[in-house]
Length: 190
Image (cartoon, rainbow, N blue to C red; front, top):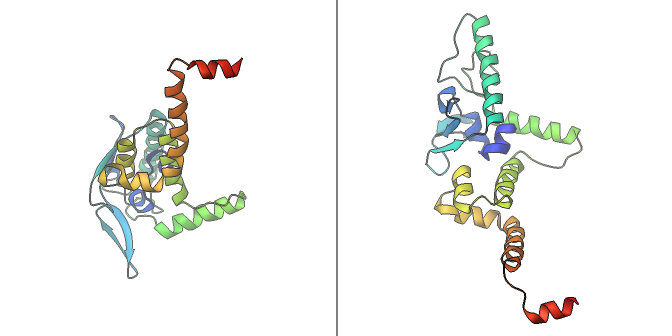
């Protein structure tokens, strides 16, 4: 869940991540593939937009992923093996050689949300990420790049236009606050 919040990555992209896609030293996560189901078969393919992207991670996320990797390495050591770079970051298998089932992830999230009385779905975390970035003043092109939206932000703009309305109000207030007040406005306030 944490990685979905901070990256806005799609479910299949996160499930498809291997350790080789994470650079803990520079804090970079490379999203280059997607795990999908077609006709009952699970396959690894390129991303939805057919483009690789590199996402910068914050220090807390790097710490969380470092700890996650250390636990995976420990489990592998207990099995008498090593954690390979091409092993999946998220796996139910102790050696991380098998990916998680994307539908199982969705069902686990739904069950957890329901137990907490929250009406939500896993994809909403992607929306949260985008909304928070845009509301926080991150430019549209950067948000689109993190989400993997092609077209320089057109898709992002269509999907997240509602949160941009709030940003537009903030922009209107900001620009107006920097201008000298017209006499009519000053007279009405007195």
